[in-house]
Amino acid sequence: MIPNPLIPLLAAVLSTAAVLVMSAQPASAQAPPAEVETRFGIRIVPGPMDSILLKDYKPEVSLVVPKTELSKARFPVIDAHTHNWMSRIITPEDVDAWVRTMDEVGVEHTVVFTGSIGEGFAKQVELFGKHKHRFQLWCSLDTENVNDPGYPQRVAAEVERCYQMGARGIGEITDKGSGIQREALPRKERMHFDDPRLDLAWRTCARLNMPVNMHIADHPSSWQPLGPYQERSPDFQGFNQYGKDVLSYQELLASRDRLLQRHPETIFIACHLSNEGNHLASLGKVLDRFPNLYLDISARDYEVGRQPRTAAAFLTKYHDRVLFGTDMEREPSMYRGWWRLLETADEFIPGRIWWPYYGLELPAPVLEALYRGNAKRLLNWSPW
Ligand SMILES: [Zn+2]
Image (cartoon, rainbow, N blue to C red; front, side, top):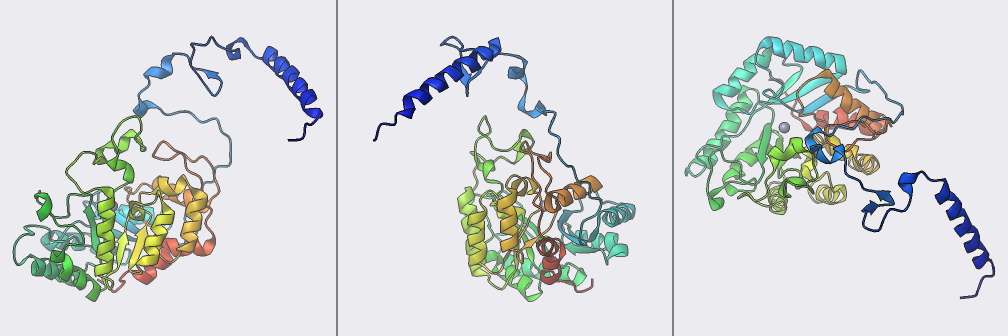
């Protein structure tokens, strides 16, 4: 290296500057004794913050940045993921109230997962009947006694019967690792999505043009221990699977891929970004591999909100593959939170998890496809 005559001079100037800066610092920032812990130059001292519980930690934010209030969505919305039980829909008046809220916030249609079949489903058809032009009702699957020899025919026949009663899709069907059968079974008897006992039911869905909303696995943090390294806020600890007798996260995603391969004619909508919203590059490859796979973004506000640029690029690239859904009760403020997240460039938006969100500012054609276009094209809109 060629010696540079300026280097000793520069070093002398810098060390003089450092002395000046140090002497101007308050006492607390002076070099601590060697045994005191420091992080990034900050002296770590004990205090009241040490005894705050994580669940009670709610910092007040001093940041002043634009806060956009949107009372209605920019385009009419189809909410493709709700539950009647979660939205506390018990009486016809509850349905009326839900329609009023939908009108206020700009939701044109709502897909309701009734979680029922048979008589239970018939009751939901009656309950929502007055507003049938605003709702699509989806049924569940018969998941009782799955070891019966006649089970494959029974489950498929009930799909058909529910279709005749008005069901236009199946879901949400959930496998978080212990199978989708109702009863607790030993590992090797459990029924996962790719089980041959469901082949006939999935083929029936394809024939009747009934998409299937599939909840497979869960957020990957659910398979990590609860403790200081747990990624999600304490509110989510009830979903933890760590140490339980269930399939691993990776085994569940593999069962999803086998299912998609096995039933290319059936439309599967993997909800919550297929629980791979933490790794959108990987999820994109799954979409590339399986044209019968679609996604919904319900309940993954925190995934898209913590990576707004990556999420916006993903939703733009796969603009014809992702449906909008909420899965979060039915408060007007809940819907408006979604509009703010997806439509604006607002920053540091408070969310329901401990990392804040950033607006995606989606381009109009992407937003329109997400809000409505894909659901309009994909779902079965024949009258019920
Ligand atoms: Zn749901």
